[in-house]
Amino acid sequence: MNTATKPNHIGRKISRIRELRGMKQEALAMELGISQQSISLIEQSEAIEDEKLEEVAKALGVTKEAIENFSEELAINYFNTFNDNSFSNSQGTFHPNNCTFNPLDKLVEAYEENKKLYERLLEAEKEKITYLEQLLNKK
Image (cartoon, rainbow, N blue to C red; front, side):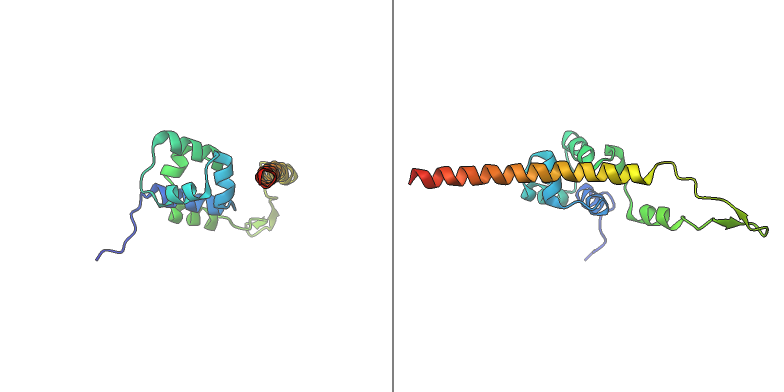
């Protein structure tokens, strides 16, 4: 019995990218306007239609190609290439990290995204309450 995993299982790649981005299935489902169970089925699928893959990629903030070409090994190797280069050469020359973005901007951006998601979740809960109240009033 061959227990090796298939390297191009798109659903597993989606699942791993979602996890690396710190996103739960429920959040991805909400972004796509589908159920959490549908996300679970997508993540179990070996292949996915191009149109659906594009939608998932957009919701995850990556390209379709990034999902198709994702490799756990390459991701690990990428993160393992980071070094502390504060001092280099034998002269101890200082080289500050050249950050290409403002970390505070990224923090504010993440806050805004989370705020929007929270507001959508809150609105969905309010709709559920309204619906349940209507059902109770009919009895």
